[in-house]
Length: 91
Image 1 (tube, helix red, strand yellow):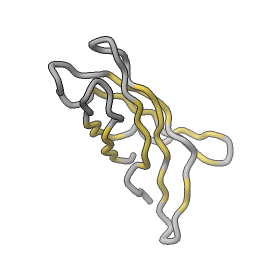
Image 2: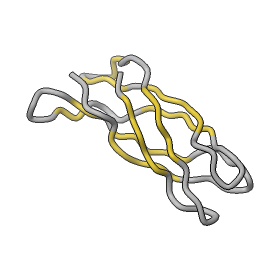
Image 3: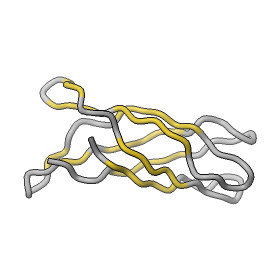
């Protein structure tokens, strides 16, 4: 499991914050991935829903690893937001 915290792209003159935790790891080839889903922060009178699958593990020098997150929120108020980032390290 990994925690994450991202800020979405600006659209319609505002952003949203995404804070959450991934699922437990799922084997994927020689690595593993995680699933995630959630609801953004409230901004400009609405929220957006999001869900996705991380990229494979990227190992760091200290033995921990991270995963990339990238996607587009669900539409709300006639627009979406892009997001991308790396989750918090885990061992």
